[in-house]
Length: 451
Image 1 (tube, helix red, strand yellow):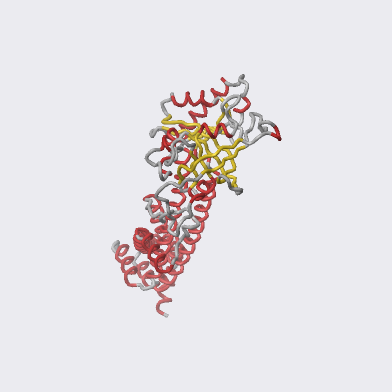
Image 2 (spheres, rainbow, N blue to C red):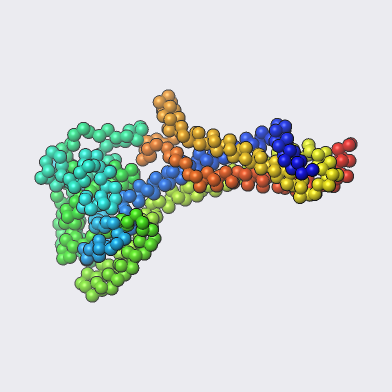
Protein backbone atom coordinates (compact mmCIF):
# COMPACT_ATOMS: atom_id res chain seq x y z
CA UNK A 1 0.00 0.00 0.00
CA UNK A 2 2.78 2.38 0.87
CA UNK A 3 4.47 1.83 -2.50
CA UNK A 4 1.83 3.89 -4.31
CA UNK A 5 3.24 7.02 -2.65
CA UNK A 6 6.42 6.53 -4.70
CA UNK A 7 5.25 4.66 -7.79
CA UNK A 8 2.20 6.78 -8.68
CA UNK A 9 3.97 10.21 -8.58
CA UNK A 10 6.74 8.82 -10.80
CA UNK A 11 4.23 7.27 -13.18
CA UNK A 12 2.21 10.49 -13.41
CA UNK A 13 5.41 12.43 -14.02
CA UNK A 14 6.55 10.15 -16.82
CA UNK A 15 3.24 9.30 -18.51
CA UNK A 16 1.37 12.61 -18.52
CA UNK A 17 2.40 14.87 -21.39
CA UNK A 18 0.83 17.87 -19.75
CA UNK A 19 3.49 17.51 -17.07
CA UNK A 20 5.96 18.91 -19.60
CA UNK A 21 4.09 22.23 -19.53
CA UNK A 22 4.59 22.56 -15.79
CA UNK A 23 8.25 21.54 -15.99
CA UNK A 24 8.89 24.01 -18.82
CA UNK A 25 7.16 26.81 -16.88
CA UNK A 26 9.33 26.18 -13.81
CA UNK A 27 12.49 25.78 -15.93
CA UNK A 28 11.91 29.04 -17.82
CA UNK A 29 11.26 30.89 -14.59
CA UNK A 30 14.43 29.49 -12.99
CA UNK A 31 16.51 30.19 -16.10
CA UNK A 32 15.34 33.80 -16.34
CA UNK A 33 15.78 34.55 -12.64
CA UNK A 34 19.22 32.88 -12.54
CA UNK A 35 20.55 34.84 -15.51
CA UNK A 36 19.07 38.24 -14.75
CA UNK A 37 19.70 38.23 -11.00
CA UNK A 38 23.29 37.00 -11.46
CA UNK A 39 24.01 39.79 -13.93
CA UNK A 40 22.18 42.43 -11.89
CA UNK A 41 23.82 41.44 -8.61
CA UNK A 42 27.17 41.37 -10.40
CA UNK A 43 26.68 44.90 -11.70
CA UNK A 44 25.68 46.20 -8.25
CA UNK A 45 28.58 44.40 -6.56
CA UNK A 46 31.15 45.61 -9.12
CA UNK A 47 29.87 49.19 -8.93
CA UNK A 48 29.93 49.17 -5.13
CA UNK A 49 33.41 47.65 -5.06
CA UNK A 50 34.78 50.27 -7.48
CA UNK A 51 33.43 52.97 -5.21
CA UNK A 52 34.82 51.19 -2.16
CA UNK A 53 38.39 51.00 -3.45
CA UNK A 54 38.14 54.63 -4.60
CA UNK A 55 37.66 56.01 -1.05
CA UNK A 56 38.85 53.28 1.32
CA UNK A 57 36.96 51.81 4.28
CA UNK A 58 36.16 54.86 6.40
CA UNK A 59 35.96 58.59 5.74
CA UNK A 60 36.38 61.41 8.23
CA UNK A 61 35.28 64.50 6.35
CA UNK A 62 33.02 67.44 5.71
CA UNK A 63 30.96 68.62 2.74
CA UNK A 64 32.12 72.19 3.32
CA UNK A 65 34.51 73.59 0.71
CA UNK A 66 36.38 75.26 3.60
CA UNK A 67 37.49 71.93 5.06
CA UNK A 68 38.57 71.43 8.67
CA UNK A 69 41.72 72.17 10.64
CA UNK A 70 43.99 70.20 12.98
CA UNK A 71 43.75 67.15 10.71
CA UNK A 72 47.46 66.42 11.10
CA UNK A 73 47.05 65.75 14.83
CA UNK A 74 44.14 63.37 14.27
CA UNK A 75 46.02 61.70 11.40
CA UNK A 76 48.92 61.01 13.74
CA UNK A 77 46.53 59.38 16.22
CA UNK A 78 45.04 57.16 13.50
CA UNK A 79 48.44 56.03 12.28
CA UNK A 80 49.36 54.94 15.82
CA UNK A 81 46.33 52.69 16.28
CA UNK A 82 46.40 48.91 15.86
CA UNK A 83 43.32 48.61 13.63
CA UNK A 84 44.21 51.21 10.95
CA UNK A 85 46.38 50.01 8.07
CA UNK A 86 46.74 53.44 6.46
CA UNK A 87 45.20 56.92 6.55
CA UNK A 88 45.72 59.87 4.23
CA UNK A 89 44.34 63.45 3.92
CA UNK A 90 42.44 64.43 0.77
CA UNK A 91 41.40 67.79 -0.67
CA UNK A 92 38.03 67.83 -2.47
CA UNK A 93 37.02 71.03 -4.22
CA UNK A 94 36.17 72.52 -7.61
CA UNK A 95 38.19 74.40 -10.19
CA UNK A 96 38.32 75.65 -13.74
CA UNK A 97 40.61 73.75 -16.09
CA UNK A 98 41.60 74.96 -19.55
CA UNK A 99 44.33 74.23 -22.05
CA UNK A 100 46.89 76.98 -21.82
CA UNK A 101 46.18 79.84 -24.22
CA UNK A 102 42.65 78.49 -24.79
CA UNK A 103 39.47 80.43 -24.04
CA UNK A 104 37.46 77.31 -23.34
CA UNK A 105 37.51 76.15 -19.73
CA UNK A 106 35.61 73.43 -17.92
CA UNK A 107 34.45 73.32 -14.33
CA UNK A 108 35.68 70.04 -12.85
CA UNK A 109 36.02 68.40 -9.46
CA UNK A 110 39.44 68.71 -7.91
CA UNK A 111 41.06 66.08 -5.74
CA UNK A 112 44.33 66.79 -4.01
CA UNK A 113 46.21 63.67 -2.94
CA UNK A 114 49.56 62.34 -1.85
CA UNK A 115 49.91 59.56 -4.45
CA UNK A 116 52.02 57.23 -2.29
CA UNK A 117 49.84 57.49 0.81
CA UNK A 118 46.65 57.52 -1.24
CA UNK A 119 47.66 54.28 -2.96
CA UNK A 120 47.97 52.58 0.44
CA UNK A 121 44.32 53.37 1.16
CA UNK A 122 42.80 53.04 -2.32
CA UNK A 123 43.66 51.45 -5.67
CA UNK A 124 44.92 54.73 -7.12
CA UNK A 125 48.02 53.28 -8.81
CA UNK A 126 45.92 50.69 -10.67
CA UNK A 127 43.87 53.47 -12.29
CA UNK A 128 46.92 55.10 -13.87
CA UNK A 129 48.23 54.30 -17.34
CA UNK A 130 51.79 55.63 -17.56
CA UNK A 131 52.78 55.58 -13.89
CA UNK A 132 50.95 52.46 -12.71
CA UNK A 133 54.16 50.92 -11.37
CA UNK A 134 55.53 54.21 -10.07
CA UNK A 135 52.75 56.04 -8.20
CA UNK A 136 55.32 58.18 -6.38
CA UNK A 137 56.06 59.79 -9.78
CA UNK A 138 52.40 60.28 -10.71
CA UNK A 139 52.68 64.08 -10.74
CA UNK A 140 55.99 64.17 -12.62
CA UNK A 141 55.46 64.33 -16.41
CA UNK A 142 57.65 61.81 -18.21
CA UNK A 143 58.88 64.45 -20.65
CA UNK A 144 60.04 66.80 -17.85
CA UNK A 145 60.03 65.68 -14.22
CA UNK A 146 60.63 69.25 -13.03
CA UNK A 147 57.18 70.44 -14.15
CA UNK A 148 54.19 70.23 -11.77
CA UNK A 149 51.88 67.45 -12.95
CA UNK A 150 48.15 67.06 -13.41
CA UNK A 151 46.18 63.81 -13.72
CA UNK A 152 42.84 63.92 -15.55
CA UNK A 153 39.96 61.45 -15.60
CA UNK A 154 40.26 59.29 -18.69
CA UNK A 155 36.85 60.20 -20.12
CA UNK A 156 38.01 63.82 -20.29
CA UNK A 157 41.05 62.84 -22.32
CA UNK A 158 40.05 59.92 -24.52
CA UNK A 159 36.99 58.57 -26.32
CA UNK A 160 35.65 55.23 -25.16
CA UNK A 161 35.55 52.67 -27.96
CA UNK A 162 32.62 50.39 -28.87
CA UNK A 163 34.05 47.61 -26.71
CA UNK A 164 34.67 49.93 -23.77
CA UNK A 165 38.36 50.28 -24.58
CA UNK A 166 40.46 53.43 -24.88
CA UNK A 167 43.12 54.19 -27.48
CA UNK A 168 45.97 55.15 -25.21
CA UNK A 169 48.86 56.98 -26.80
CA UNK A 170 52.20 55.12 -26.66
CA UNK A 171 53.90 58.28 -25.38
CA UNK A 172 52.60 60.98 -23.09
CA UNK A 173 51.29 64.05 -24.91
CA UNK A 174 52.78 67.41 -23.99
CA UNK A 175 49.77 69.36 -22.76
CA UNK A 176 49.72 72.32 -20.38
CA UNK A 177 46.61 73.24 -18.42
CA UNK A 178 45.74 76.39 -16.53
CA UNK A 179 44.00 75.47 -13.27
CA UNK A 180 42.08 78.19 -11.44
CA UNK A 181 40.52 77.94 -7.98
CA UNK A 182 38.68 80.37 -5.73
CA UNK A 183 40.38 80.31 -2.29
CA UNK A 184 38.14 80.58 0.76
CA UNK A 185 38.81 81.81 4.26
CA UNK A 186 37.97 79.57 7.25
CA UNK A 187 34.71 81.54 7.52
CA UNK A 188 33.77 80.61 3.95
CA UNK A 189 34.33 84.01 2.35
CA UNK A 190 36.44 84.62 -0.73
CA UNK A 191 40.01 85.48 0.16
CA UNK A 192 40.29 89.24 -0.41
CA UNK A 193 36.51 89.69 -0.61
CA UNK A 194 34.50 90.01 -3.83
CA UNK A 195 37.41 91.79 -5.48
CA UNK A 196 39.85 89.11 -4.32
CA UNK A 197 42.06 87.29 -6.74
CA UNK A 198 41.86 83.78 -8.12
CA UNK A 199 44.61 81.29 -7.45
CA UNK A 200 45.85 79.96 -10.77
CA UNK A 201 48.78 77.87 -11.94
CA UNK A 202 49.87 76.01 -15.06
CA UNK A 203 50.22 72.24 -14.73
CA UNK A 204 51.47 69.72 -17.26
CA UNK A 205 49.51 66.61 -18.17
CA UNK A 206 51.27 63.71 -16.43
CA UNK A 207 48.79 60.81 -16.66
CA UNK A 208 45.14 59.80 -16.92
CA UNK A 209 43.10 57.88 -14.38
CA UNK A 210 40.63 55.11 -15.21
CA UNK A 211 38.69 54.30 -12.04
CA UNK A 212 35.84 52.61 -13.91
CA UNK A 213 33.39 55.14 -12.41
CA UNK A 214 31.80 57.22 -15.15
CA UNK A 215 31.07 60.29 -13.00
CA UNK A 216 34.60 60.31 -11.61
CA UNK A 217 36.43 59.66 -14.88
CA UNK A 218 34.45 62.33 -16.68
CA UNK A 219 34.61 65.10 -14.07
CA UNK A 220 37.75 64.71 -11.97
CA UNK A 221 41.27 66.04 -12.09
CA UNK A 222 43.99 65.30 -9.56
CA UNK A 223 46.74 67.50 -8.14
CA UNK A 224 49.35 66.86 -5.50
CA UNK A 225 47.98 67.49 -2.02
CA UNK A 226 50.24 70.48 -1.36
CA UNK A 227 49.38 72.18 -4.67
CA UNK A 228 45.63 71.64 -4.17
CA UNK A 229 45.84 72.91 -0.61
CA UNK A 230 47.55 76.11 -1.78
CA UNK A 231 45.18 76.71 -4.72
CA UNK A 232 42.11 76.28 -2.49
CA UNK A 233 43.45 78.62 0.17
CA UNK A 234 43.68 75.89 2.81
CA UNK A 235 47.20 76.74 3.98
CA UNK A 236 46.55 79.78 6.19
CA UNK A 237 46.16 80.63 8.93
CA UNK A 238 45.97 76.89 9.76
CA UNK A 239 46.33 74.04 7.31
CA UNK A 240 43.03 72.43 6.42
CA UNK A 241 41.81 69.38 4.53
CA UNK A 242 38.45 68.16 3.22
CA UNK A 243 38.63 64.55 4.37
CA UNK A 244 40.77 61.74 5.71
CA UNK A 245 40.46 58.41 3.90
CA UNK A 246 41.14 55.37 6.11
CA UNK A 247 41.84 51.74 5.36
CA UNK A 248 41.38 49.16 8.11
CA UNK A 249 43.48 46.08 8.60
CA UNK A 250 42.03 42.91 6.99
CA UNK A 251 40.74 41.39 10.24
CA UNK A 252 38.78 44.51 11.24
CA UNK A 253 35.02 44.46 10.61
CA UNK A 254 33.81 47.60 8.81
CA UNK A 255 31.21 48.81 11.31
CA UNK A 256 33.40 48.01 14.30
CA UNK A 257 36.34 49.89 12.80
CA UNK A 258 34.14 52.86 11.91
CA UNK A 259 32.76 52.96 15.46
CA UNK A 260 36.32 53.01 16.85
CA UNK A 261 37.25 55.93 14.59
CA UNK A 262 34.04 57.75 15.56
CA UNK A 263 34.92 57.40 19.24
CA UNK A 264 38.44 58.66 18.56
CA UNK A 265 36.98 61.68 16.76
CA UNK A 266 34.62 62.50 19.64
CA UNK A 267 37.57 62.50 22.03
CA UNK A 268 39.64 64.59 19.62
CA UNK A 269 36.75 67.05 19.21
CA UNK A 270 36.66 67.60 22.99
CA UNK A 271 40.41 68.19 23.10
CA UNK A 272 40.17 70.80 20.31
CA UNK A 273 37.08 72.52 21.70
CA UNK A 274 39.01 75.57 22.94
CA UNK A 275 41.13 76.04 19.82
CA UNK A 276 40.63 79.02 17.53
CA UNK A 277 39.18 77.12 14.55
CA UNK A 278 37.33 74.44 16.52
CA UNK A 279 34.09 75.56 14.85
CA UNK A 280 35.32 73.94 11.62
CA UNK A 281 35.06 70.55 13.33
CA UNK A 282 31.32 70.86 13.99
CA UNK A 283 30.26 69.52 10.60
CA UNK A 284 32.85 66.75 10.34
CA UNK A 285 31.36 63.27 10.18
CA UNK A 286 32.79 59.77 10.48
CA UNK A 287 31.21 57.33 8.04
CA UNK A 288 31.85 53.93 6.58
CA UNK A 289 32.30 53.93 2.82
CA UNK A 290 28.77 52.54 2.37
CA UNK A 291 27.17 55.43 4.24
CA UNK A 292 29.50 57.97 2.65
CA UNK A 293 28.51 56.80 -0.85
CA UNK A 294 24.89 55.86 -0.12
CA UNK A 295 23.52 58.47 -2.55
CA UNK A 296 25.64 56.92 -5.30
CA UNK A 297 25.08 53.24 -4.57
CA UNK A 298 21.46 53.32 -3.35
CA UNK A 299 19.87 53.88 -6.81
CA UNK A 300 21.48 50.72 -8.20
CA UNK A 301 20.53 48.71 -5.13
CA UNK A 302 16.94 49.93 -5.51
CA UNK A 303 16.96 48.80 -9.14
CA UNK A 304 18.10 45.36 -8.01
CA UNK A 305 15.29 45.30 -5.43
CA UNK A 306 12.71 46.29 -8.05
CA UNK A 307 14.02 43.55 -10.32
CA UNK A 308 13.57 41.05 -7.50
CA UNK A 309 9.98 42.19 -6.98
CA UNK A 310 9.29 41.70 -10.69
CA UNK A 311 10.57 38.15 -10.50
CA UNK A 312 8.41 37.48 -7.47
CA UNK A 313 5.50 38.35 -9.76
CA UNK A 314 6.88 35.91 -12.34
CA UNK A 315 6.95 33.28 -9.59
CA UNK A 316 3.30 34.01 -8.78
CA UNK A 317 2.40 33.50 -12.45
CA UNK A 318 4.26 30.17 -12.35
CA UNK A 319 2.18 29.17 -9.31
CA UNK A 320 -1.00 29.71 -11.33
CA UNK A 321 0.40 27.69 -14.24
CA UNK A 322 1.16 24.79 -11.87
CA UNK A 323 -2.31 25.18 -10.32
CA UNK A 324 -4.04 24.93 -13.71
CA UNK A 325 -1.91 21.96 -14.76
CA UNK A 326 -2.74 20.11 -11.55
CA UNK A 327 -6.43 20.83 -11.91
CA UNK A 328 -6.27 19.20 -15.34
CA UNK A 329 -4.20 16.24 -14.13
CA UNK A 330 -6.36 15.59 -11.07
CA UNK A 331 -9.56 15.82 -13.12
CA UNK A 332 -8.21 12.94 -15.24
CA UNK A 333 -7.15 10.97 -12.19
CA UNK A 334 -10.46 10.92 -10.30
CA UNK A 335 -10.73 7.15 -10.72
CA UNK A 336 -7.29 6.62 -9.17
CA UNK A 337 -8.26 8.81 -6.22
CA UNK A 338 -11.52 6.89 -5.74
CA UNK A 339 -9.74 3.52 -5.84
CA UNK A 340 -7.11 4.69 -3.34
CA UNK A 341 -9.81 5.96 -0.99
CA UNK A 342 -11.77 2.71 -1.31
CA UNK A 343 -8.57 0.93 -0.19
CA UNK A 344 -8.39 3.11 2.92
CA UNK A 345 -6.11 5.97 1.84
CA UNK A 346 -6.64 9.05 4.01
CA UNK A 347 -7.11 12.62 2.81
CA UNK A 348 -3.58 13.41 3.95
CA UNK A 349 -2.22 10.49 1.92
CA UNK A 350 -3.92 11.80 -1.25
CA UNK A 351 -2.56 15.30 -0.65
CA UNK A 352 0.90 13.87 -0.01
CA UNK A 353 0.72 11.83 -3.23
CA UNK A 354 0.15 14.89 -5.41
CA UNK A 355 2.64 16.99 -3.47
CA UNK A 356 5.27 14.33 -4.23
CA UNK A 357 4.26 14.71 -7.86
CA UNK A 358 4.64 18.48 -7.58
CA UNK A 359 8.03 17.97 -5.93
CA UNK A 360 9.21 15.97 -8.95
CA UNK A 361 8.02 18.75 -11.27
CA UNK A 362 9.77 21.40 -9.18
CA UNK A 363 13.01 19.40 -9.01
CA UNK A 364 13.04 18.69 -12.73
CA UNK A 365 12.22 22.29 -13.67
CA UNK A 366 14.77 23.71 -11.20
CA UNK A 367 17.58 21.40 -12.38
CA UNK A 368 16.91 22.02 -16.09
CA UNK A 369 16.46 25.78 -15.68
CA UNK A 370 19.50 26.23 -13.45
CA UNK A 371 21.72 24.07 -15.65
CA UNK A 372 20.65 26.05 -18.71
CA UNK A 373 21.15 29.35 -16.85
CA UNK A 374 24.65 28.44 -15.65
CA UNK A 375 25.63 27.22 -19.12
CA UNK A 376 24.34 30.45 -20.69
CA UNK A 377 26.13 32.64 -18.13
CA UNK A 378 29.40 30.80 -18.75
CA UNK A 379 29.20 31.80 -22.44
CA UNK A 380 27.27 35.08 -22.19
CA UNK A 381 30.25 37.29 -23.08
CA UNK A 382 31.20 35.03 -25.99
CA UNK A 383 27.61 35.18 -27.24
CA UNK A 384 27.57 38.97 -26.92
CA UNK A 385 30.85 39.20 -28.85
CA UNK A 386 29.40 37.09 -31.66
CA UNK A 387 26.27 39.24 -31.81
CA UNK A 388 28.39 42.40 -31.83
CA UNK A 389 30.66 41.11 -34.60
CA UNK A 390 27.74 40.06 -36.82
CA UNK A 391 25.02 42.56 -36.00
CA UNK A 392 26.71 45.31 -33.97
CA UNK A 393 24.37 44.58 -31.03
CA UNK A 394 25.37 44.79 -27.35
CA UNK A 395 23.43 44.43 -24.12
CA UNK A 396 24.97 47.75 -23.03
CA UNK A 397 26.53 50.22 -25.43
CA UNK A 398 30.10 50.40 -24.09
CA UNK A 399 30.56 53.85 -25.64
CA UNK A 400 27.89 55.11 -23.24
CA UNK A 401 28.11 52.83 -20.20
CA UNK A 402 31.29 52.27 -18.22
CA UNK A 403 30.85 48.49 -18.14
CA UNK A 404 33.38 45.87 -19.15
CA UNK A 405 32.36 42.23 -19.50
CA UNK A 406 28.85 41.21 -18.48
CA UNK A 407 29.09 39.97 -14.86
CA UNK A 408 28.63 36.20 -14.83
CA UNK A 409 30.12 35.17 -11.50
CA UNK A 410 27.80 32.61 -9.92
CA UNK A 411 26.65 33.14 -6.36
CA UNK A 412 26.04 29.89 -4.49
CA UNK A 413 23.65 31.49 -2.01
CA UNK A 414 21.57 33.06 -4.78
CA UNK A 415 21.42 29.76 -6.71
CA UNK A 416 20.31 27.92 -3.57
CA UNK A 417 17.53 30.45 -2.94
CA UNK A 418 16.31 30.19 -6.54
CA UNK A 419 16.41 26.37 -6.44
CA UNK A 420 14.44 26.13 -3.19
CA UNK A 421 12.00 28.82 -4.36
CA UNK A 422 11.28 26.87 -7.57
CA UNK A 423 10.35 23.78 -5.55
CA UNK A 424 8.27 25.85 -3.14
CA UNK A 425 6.40 27.46 -6.05
CA UNK A 426 5.55 24.02 -7.44
CA UNK A 427 4.30 22.78 -4.08
CA UNK A 428 2.20 25.89 -3.50
CA UNK A 429 0.65 25.64 -6.96
CA UNK A 430 -0.31 22.01 -6.36
CA UNK A 431 -1.62 22.46 -2.83
CA UNK A 432 -5.13 23.81 -3.55
CA UNK A 433 -6.16 21.26 -6.23
CA UNK A 434 -4.64 18.46 -4.12
CA UNK A 435 -6.69 19.49 -1.07
CA UNK A 436 -9.88 19.73 -3.12
CA UNK A 437 -9.26 16.30 -4.63
CA UNK A 438 -8.66 14.79 -1.19
CA UNK A 439 -11.97 16.16 0.14
CA UNK A 440 -14.04 14.36 -2.47
CA UNK A 441 -15.90 11.27 -1.26
CA UNK A 442 -15.06 7.85 -2.61
CA UNK A 443 -18.64 7.02 -3.69
CA UNK A 444 -19.08 10.32 -5.56
CA UNK A 445 -15.80 9.86 -7.44
CA UNK A 446 -16.54 6.29 -8.55
CA UNK A 447 -20.10 7.13 -9.51
CA UNK A 448 -18.95 9.95 -11.69
CA UNK A 449 -16.34 7.68 -13.23
CA UNK A 450 -19.00 5.10 -14.14
CA UNK A 451 -21.36 7.55 -15.85
